[in-house]
Length: 250
Ligand SMILES: [Zn+2]
Image 1 (cartoon, rainbow, N blue to C red):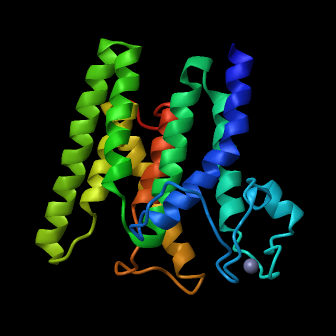
Image 2: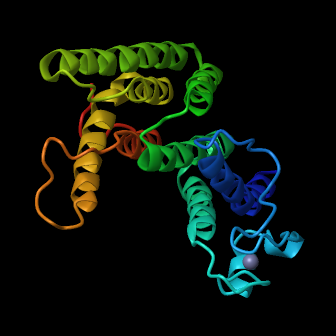
Image 3: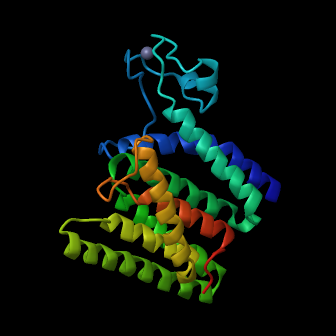
């Protein structure tokens, strides 16, 4: 049973990646996410089955539309590869019973991080189910994990909301968003409250790194450099879910 489950996860992952790509492009544009890609953006030619096989289509067509030859964005193969990487990571780290829940967490975090990086937006439609699913997974592990996860969800939401409120009072403009507070709630639901300090720390470091990348190497980012916090929080959540708190233990 276990090898079958592992194989199924690996086999499904590029298709999940393809779906995540559609989600990332269509959710912010408020377009329906069901129904795959239908046509080439350049020439409008309808895409057939062989144009939509994750990774393989890209590789065999050398990244170009089969009809008009326009170079296609590497976005889809990149996100498909990332989804495969999440699955491989899960196979390496997690016991069989946590394989699929962990992969679903990783894939959702991947979509959230990319949407937030592009649009400074963490959609409720992804974040809120992630909170609920985290509590279900912990409840399934026992009553104590469920309690520490519930405390984590509440503490995550309240702490970032408080930081946001304080920042607004001091600076007169929003720093973090409600989406960040909800994502931190999801982080707490999955990791338990004890994981929150480390997730915040990793999130802060990752965001500083992202700020440097955004300046394109042209100097030091200022306090006004706009950086989404979601990607950092996603990285922190993923690492602490994978390894538990390493640096800070309660
Ligand atoms: Zn074309």
